[in-house]
Image 1 (cartoon, rainbow, N blue to C red):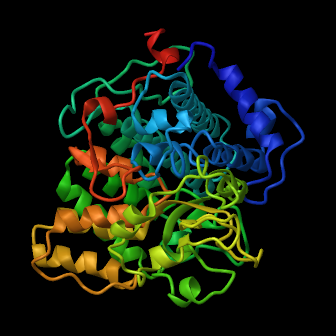
Image 2: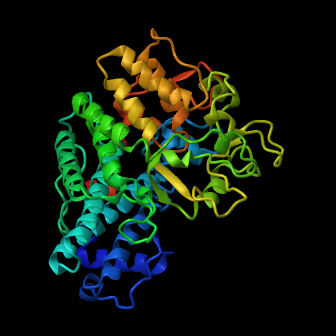
Image 3: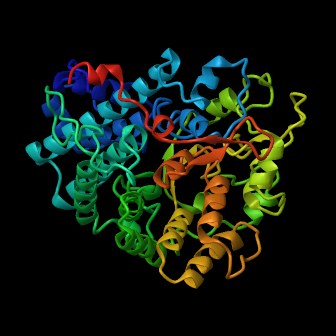
Length: 476
């Protein structure tokens, strides 16, 4: 981090977030700004946590760069015109270009500011000891989980190809508020610290109400309200599965993913097809019941209009070549992910399908409005399928997802890895996971976003590893 990101600036940023944003979970902000007054009131502590969640939905992080825009460009998800140089430099991996450096500098600085604020919360909630243990555990459990998640995504962006060079230099890992630059650690050391934080989060969230199916409390308390929009117990287990898979710990990844499937499936049921394909102007395009963890992004539909709206000129809209899009979905209109999300617009004179996953709905009371997906239960099925030693069982897990996407079962002889790649391409459009899948598996060639169908682009360390920002390296 930059030298000027110190604790006092952190508190100013936290408090600025606290008073400038709409409240994340309906908690009113405090009137006083002093640290002691914030951390000696329950409402103040809750608002600090809310401010951190609001940090995550910024366009620099999960409200844009790490989901629907920058990271998806790296995955060749969109066909980018040569005339739009700003995006073309992303899809050609020109990390030295000013606009690309700027985007990833924003990812880096915004993520580490969020981490710094998380660390401030962890330190002060213990220092002031305001809340009873049951409430403290929920707050700290979420904080440790968020800290792990943020470091992990920074590792996935800026770290080495882990399967090739786990001991290569990666990123710093901050566990305390500090005025000193953190040492840049190896990728394996970062993974160790991530898993340690997730273990702490799991222990602290052992009594999370979500484990008994309470996602929205009838009493609407801060600690039981909208647990799927907070870093909950099952989200922690899902992150353990994701991180262990990334690190090649297949047994641990399989175990964690199965716990989520076995214990959480009844609380995160597969989306009813009628709410997707026959809901008129109000389709649940994000499959909201399946989201183990999502964040509330009140700017979601503005982002849709900025990136995907049919009124945008062809050189500015983010959309794949339609021939390639059809190939990705294997020309199967029965796939709920295809027919609900990719639509030929009735306005804007577009002759090709555009992306509607994050388009607004007519019914403004829908609970799925403003949800930005971060972790899906379907991913747990993919992780189990990839790590299963029994190929027949692995196919069953893939088929479970396919069935709930309107598709027929795969044959027992199907190539599991090939089918998983197809599933990642279909399932996570606009969610930022495909590039990380390619990088984790060190896929040597991927489909070229601007091509109609068969053309590919070669991938390697120069494409997969985003250089650390100048603001970090010049102080090391």
